Amino acid sequence: MKTKEILLGGTTVAIAVIGFLAVAECVLRFLPVAANPLVVPVTRIDPVFHFTPNRSFVYSKDWDLTMVNYGRTNNAGWVNKLDYREDDPLPLIGVIGDSYIEALAVPSDTTAQGHLSESLKGKFRVYSFAASGAPLSQYLVWAAHAAREYKAKALIINVVSNDYDESHLSYSRQVPGFWIYAPETSEQLRLQLREFHVGAIRSVLKMSALARYLFLNLQIKETLSNAQWLRAFVVIDSPTKVYAGNTDASPDPARIEASIAAINAFFRDLPKYTGLQPDRITFTMDGFRYPGAANAGKGSYFDVMRTVFRKTAETLGYEVIDMDPLFFADFQLHGGRFEYPRDAHWNPTAHALVAKAILSSRLIGRLQCTLDNSCEGGRGFRRTPSGRATLHEPF
Image (cartoon, rainbow, N blue to C red; front, side, top):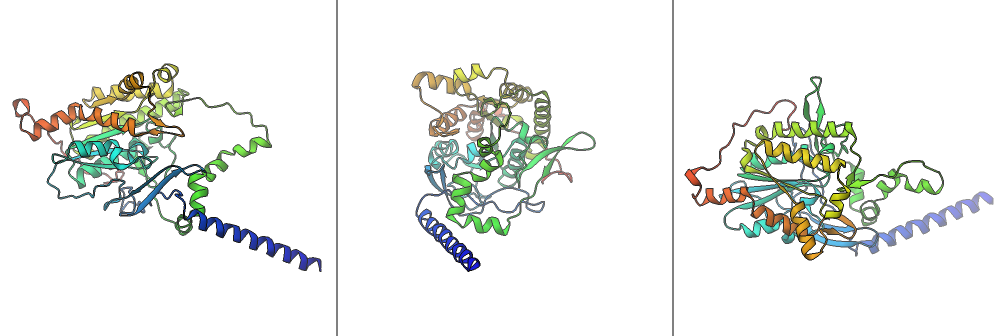
């Protein structure tokens, strides 16, 4: 009799749980639950990370589904309202970056690349190549893809706080599908791919609104992995991290050394992978954004690495647009913010300032004069010989 009661009770509980989950699934299907773009498999045969083409996505954040934005991947699998054509006669400017350029939360027309595309319409195409979590090492692969597949005449590469260390194997987040720098026996850094394959369980979970709500909106995996809930039961004696520029502020010597090695490898490989001269590539750099934050962040990891990257790039002849002076000036004039209340990524105000800075850059000036045949002395752009890929390179 007792066994029968236990089975009956267990069955009742199971039915109640299943019923609750079914109701939750039905309700959430009518709400703007996050549905990120789907990544296609990335292998040695197909080495370029991108999304499934022509698929709608929904961006929302947190339990209350804030910051809702709807979008669609284009014919080539990128988050851009323009379809990409390899045979388009207009010169191409490629814009490369991570989630700042991917910009799932930002309406397409108000992104930096959206502003550029509209401002340069009829003269240049502006295609973006970006995805969340990508570091410098992955930017190199997309830069090569833009130059080789779409014959990009110029590139704009956006650099943010975690791009330096996460390009190195020792500090990489090991995101499947991305290329990172790993040391060889010769102690030279070479690109290494962590392949991405779509699993059956992952595919099924992405079809469920409830699963997406738990994993994307509530970030349940990250919450559990950080073990914050253990603090209610166990005393954990760990120092509180201090952040500067949205990354750990500690100027750890080993981390800085690895970051500098990754930066040097990136600039070593950039001309060979893209076939472009330095005067055809411009870097935009995110910064502290506010004078007070910059003062507080002096000597931090981010402060050190921004300086190292900028000096290295400029020494090699690349143009670097440091956004901090522009952010500071706009903040002092208008007092507005450059990120969302719950999210550190650029909001439309920041994107507009970045686009304005790019349109005023030397790169755009050179492109315009080349297009108009108005360059002094007839000097245009030159291509460097494109080196043949080795076994360790993605192309």
